[in-house]
Image 1 (cartoon, rainbow, N blue to C red):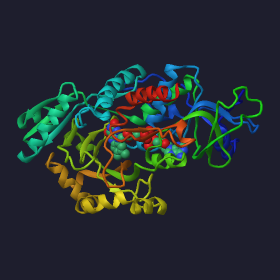
Image 2: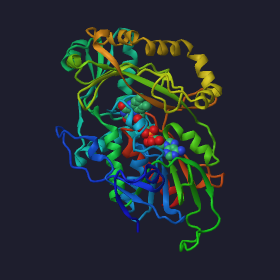
Image 3: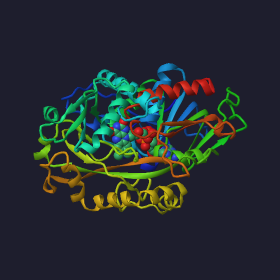
Image 4: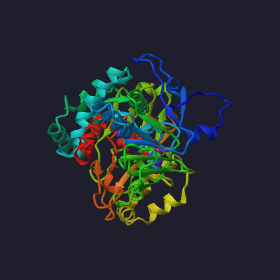
Length: 473
Ligand SMILES: Cc1cc2nc3c(=O)[nH]c(=O)nc-3n(C[C@H](O)[C@H](O)[C@H](O)COP(=O)(O)OP(=O)(O)OC[C@H]3O[C@@H](n4cnc5c(N)ncnc54)[C@H](O)[C@@H]3O)c2cc1C
């Protein structure tokens, strides 16, 4: 049985890094005004692993402690409480990357191609998310969203979006005229808009931590600081194992870490192509990281924005365009833009990883995309360097905003999946490659971009169905 250690200064950090897996402790029920602090989710206990070299064994290991990995682990345990499940995460906390660096919008399902996984899972996911937040006491706000046409040339695209939203069964969606925009957003101007009352905001990092707590409460394990470096098939069972060769995959981590399991699910976000390659599967679709930088509206100007205000998106691009997003703490974020990140998990221009950068530049798909959109790329970089240009784009919606009203804010990095012909992978992609030995026991989540966080509970259900179908678990 594992020994419980209280966090003490006396425990050397390397001991915790190498031997501990984190268990998230009880958190109190929350409501909108509860003044909740993340510190309530900080680790209170560490459980040391055995001091022998025997590896821990699990029915399934999930690589990646983002919102998709934790939601999937939770769903699997809800369906079968006797499953032995572990999440392995390379960072020292959950939601360290995309799940903790996003706009925090609960999307209603307006944009996505009818019949696509995104359309289906987003509409299902937002309903499940509201219900889950109510049950767990996670604060959210159903503040609605306007997609605003600022001139007549955008109206045909707005009407197309309305059609899509109706086909996707988005609740409450309606077209409104210029003067009705003011009823929702008194400072916003436009000639026509789509109003979505179902859209909301939430803190997805907090949601991920709740999923993690649910996993631990149901007996799952979370190994932090465990960076997966390889998968191998193991022919022989461990000495003393009664389960024969049931746990025939070794998941290797940095240092001398390893765990064994029967099956693997990878939910590696920005590293999803590399994790697939590590298991002998194809590196296609390839991930190219695009950083999205936000500006912050100064507190004295937050009255200018009530809910989410979005532009009519240009269907040629995968991103929704710079928008106004209220945050659950009362801040207003403006953005994000989209610039090539010089490091997969690099949140500033000064974060550079030559391997990541050169991999992106050398990838034929990226070269083709870059050639096609040279001027758009140049515009995005200019907006990043000179926020004045981004403010000008925002003034089309709220003319009162000036450069004096904004400061630079946080950023996130999107995992943009693309094919070698330069086409962007638009839908969610989950893949098992049956013809590689280790990889045949692995399901890879290859693409889970926005609205992945909104859809997380619905994605988790789909993944659990797929794991049952493919591996009978
Ligand atoms: C700027 C931005 C804005 C967005 N806005 C929204 C929004 O408003 N609404 C919405 O619904 N969605 C939004 N999204 C999308 C949403 O954030 C993602 O769909 C979601 O977070 C994906 O979750 P994930 O678990 O797949 O990935 P991640 O959160 O990136 O998690 C992957 C995890 O895998 C770990 N990992 C990777 N490699 C290894 C390894 N070798 N070993 C161990 N662990 C590993 C990483 O450390 C990471 O924690 C946005 C995304 C971005 C970037």
